[in-house]
Length: 84
Image (cartoon, rainbow, N blue to C red; front, side, top):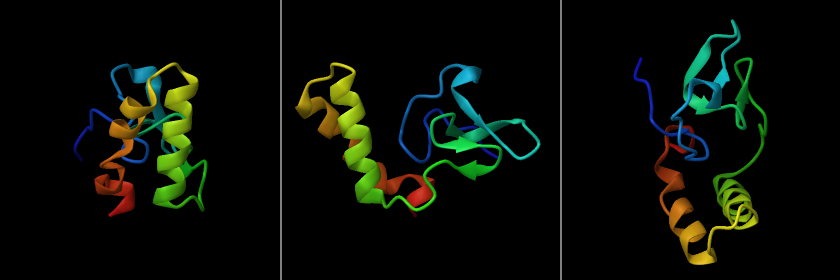
C-alpha cells in the first residue's frame, strides 16, 4: 500500500510519524492523520465532505492562516481517497 504525504481525509501534512493515525493493530496509518483516524476507525464517522471542508477551514483560521489561504487548503479536499 502507498504511503501518503498528506491525510486522505483532511489533507493535513503527514511529515512526522507521530502525525499519523493508527490501524486496529496500532500500526501507524499510511493514509490518515491522528486527528481523523484512530485504531482503524474514523473519529468523525458521519461527517460529509462539505462538513470536513468547513471544519478544516475553521481550524486553519483558528491557527492564524488567512481566510483565503484556508479556502485554498480545502479546495480539492473532495479528491482525497476518503471522499472518492
